[in-house]
Length: 209
Image (cartoon, rainbow, N blue to C red; front, side):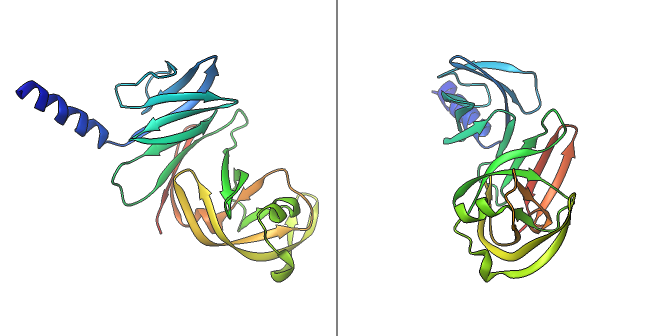
C-alpha cells in the first residue's frame, strides 16, 4: 500500500511540472523530439516518456501528443511549453535554418502562418489573409508604411483574436496591406504583451496581460 501511494505521489508531482517539448523530425509511425532541452529521442506512436508525454498519432508534417492530459498538435520545428495550473500562458518557438521564427497560429479563428518580426510595429496581414479572416479593411484607418519595395498603402484595424500556441490575445492592433503577403508578420502590437526569452535557437513567449 505504501509503495502504491508513493508511486501515485511521484506521478502527480511529475504531472505538475512544466514540460517543454520540441518536434524536430518525423519518421513513419515515429516522432523525433527534444524534451526539456535534453537529448533528441525517437518516440513510436503510443509511447510515453518519463515526463508523461504521449505520442498519440502522426499526421502529414505534424504529430499529436498528449501533454498534461490534453492533446496538442505540433508541426515540425514547433515547440510548446505546457505548465499545468499556471496563470500565464507560454509557448516556445524554434528558429528555422535561416534563423527565422516561423510558426502556425490563427487570427479570428482562421489558421495563419506567422513570422515573428520585432521590427514591425503592428501585426501585418496581406489582403488575401485579411479576407480569409473576415476583416473588412475598408472600415479601418488608411495610412502608409515603408517596405523593402518602398511605401505601401495599409489600413489600420483591430483583430478580435490572435492565437499562438496556448496564447490567445484579444483586441490586437494590426495593419492590412493592399497586396498579398507570403506570411503574417507578428509585430510588436502582439509581442509587447509578452515576456520574450531568447536562448540560442529557441524563443519563449510568456503572456504578460
